[in-house]
Each structure stands twice: as structure tokens, then as C-alpha cells.
Image: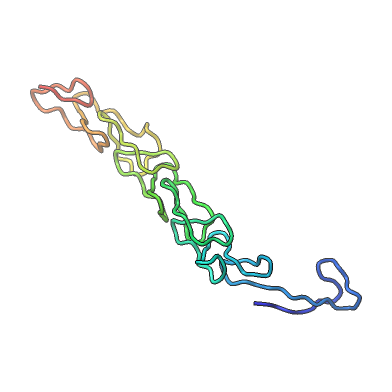
Length: 173
């Protein structure tokens, strides 16, 4: 779209010989910018040939270059909304696979630091009921007489009668 008009006195701090300055300005559709008098795709957008019409990268994808012909998936441990030029790390306590538009909370018995593609299990002998745990210290050791033999436990089990829980992760007769 071209827009024409005039100003009284000056345009861009330059004064013409007369009282009016005439200008022509080109505007492009959304997701595009002017480059050398042509509308091309802006960062965060793409088209088959890199020029208009341009489409915003979908959520979970990104583009850092102008005139892009495709968008790339966000890496695992990151996310984006539509039309982004970069992906954002997942917060601690969350995770994502590649190409995601949001991060998922870690489940009970797991935790994560920021930017992770999966949550880390609490180790055998420990447990947690916290959803979205951000640090490993959320994993608590089982009390004496209890055990959690599997990684990622959300509770400890009482040692059965006649068995010994020698450590918080094992049971033996």
C-alpha cells in the first residue's frame, strides 16, 4: 500500500524550496516489512518465496531471519507463541519436547531446572508430592521403616511385617 501526502514546511528535518514537502510512503501487510521498495516477510513470519503474503510462524516455531521461506521448531526445553523470532526456555519445574507452544508442569515424584526437555525423577528411596518442583531438594527421604524402591515415587510404602527396610530404597526378608 502506498500513501501519499504533504507536510507544511519540513519532512525529516529537511526543508524544500516551497512551503510543502511531498512524500510517498510504502506500507506492508502484517507480518511483513519494506526492504528496497518490496514487502518481504519480517522475523517470526514466512512465505513460500519470502515475500508477501506472509504468515506468522505458528506457536512452537520461530524464524530469526527476514524473507524466511520456513519456520523452525523450538528446541526441546523451550516454547513460543505464534509469530515469534525466538523461543523461550521453559521455567524451572516445567519441560517441553521440540515444537511446543507451552511447557508442561513436572508431575509428582519429579523436578526440573529451567530449559529442560524432561523432568528428573526423585531417586529410589525418596518421594515428592509437589507438582512443578524446581529443585531436587523437594525429594524427601523415606522415614525409617518405609521404602520407595522405584525412581519417581510420590509416596513411601511401609515395610511389610517380617521384612527389613535396610535402606530407604530396599526391602529384604
